[in-house]
Image 1 (tube, rainbow over the protein chains, first blue to last red):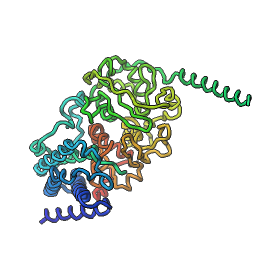
Image 2 (image 1 turned 120 degrees about the vertical axis):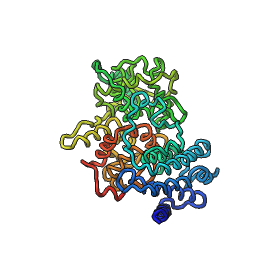
Image 3 (image 1 turned 30 degrees about the vertical axis):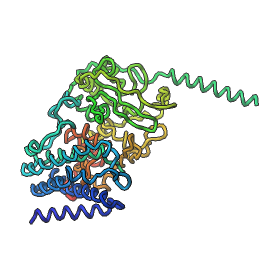
Image 4 (image 1 turned 30 degrees about the horizontal axis):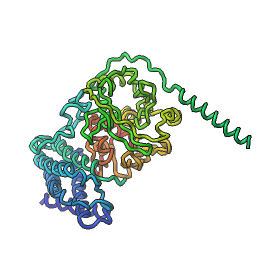
Length: 185
Length: 305
């Protein structure tokens, strides 16, 4: 029951947020904006738990992770057919000129959110700084420090504390936004 | 008519003389020898905080760390960050610690040429000798990359580097990193990071016709960032109005997630991914305290976000 309520709350809030944020969009552009807004809403619910500001609830984290999966991978890329850029869309042309990279990030989000779903029961770790590696790898060398090229699999994320897995998962959002989303303000 | 010509001629002669003076004008000050032993870990940490890796690596093209080449598109032309690896020809392999200190703190290259302010050296002006020694030790660990960064693509008059001497005279503002004794150590640590190494104002403060920061609009945002990105206003009131708290701002510097549930895009995504994510929780919180101008972390009301 709780799960259903939370999912419903997330969905309703997502729709409400979309109503004012993405005025003017219709059709498939609106559809993908709604999907992004729904994920954003889930992030907004889960992030304070990861910071210890609200009570940690593994089921809510799993709900969010499942929601990401629903909107990731091909479910995401199929909402970006060629020729659907331009106002009011915020998608940059790079989505289509660098399609493979875009699609790879969409599938990375799917993989990572599967890992997050499985990591939900691990609870919070102490996400300290990532400074233990230090030295040379800190200067960009080495393969640690969650290097942007090092793709992990869901099984690896599943072993992490859920706040770390959540950070890994949502970092994919940021990488994708940096490259493929125009910044409004 | 003759008088007019004399006047024009006089102005021309004076201008030429003035230009000559500017070109010959020595800028910067001598660096006293830096004998301190550097610490690699501390240097790498400071390099992360300062954005060295973020800007001097061409991630887009899969470039090697710190090999330079990432383009910075500005109204003045396109700048390419230099190669900072240990390569003796194209990097800093032949530099001395003192030359490095002059480059970082004063913005002057070993051959005496001033750097463009696309390199935010003005924010690093207060780095101590120990900071410089630490950074220099860390840079010695970077494998050499035997490739030059592309030449800057800057048109006239901005390709005239003597003009940068005038720029320095007008816009080399003190970074204001000194502690304020009325505030606690955490706030002051945040002040040193935000105003110094992390150089937040380089993007979050708008720039004038000459690329100098508009000090009266400090942290009021900038919608003309290189590459078409936009930086929002980050004054305490602006942040509070947009639901930022010390806790969620520190978290954003770690994860890129905003209080509304969005994930940073644009340049800020890179700042977090290659910079602030590597800082300690204590330092990220200090930055948030200073930016929100608070002495301590909010507790009870933070949960409402």
